[in-house]
Image (tube, rainbow, N blue to C red; front, side, top):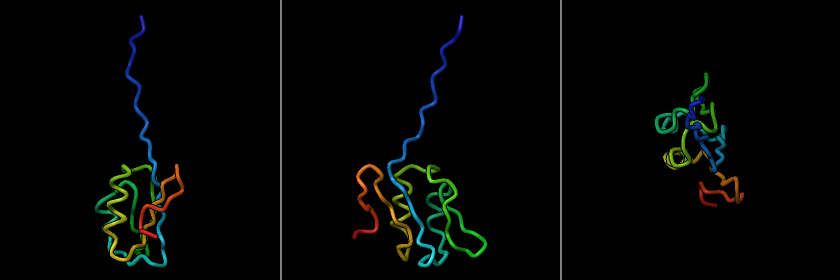
Length: 86
């Protein structure tokens, strides 16, 4: 008799994030707040290592904490830019 195992719930991310590398100053707040999504590269500029690494809330908080507004957050379902405000 087979035992039913609970299926692992797939993490759904509605927000897409993009780093504006030309604006990034390497402050690292995005890495501190969403370390599974962001990392600083060899030039000390933020890169996305896993767009689904953190929750939408964590990614939005990281974007809002960026001192130079170098992270753009877009709602994938509506196409609306969530952050920064347009």
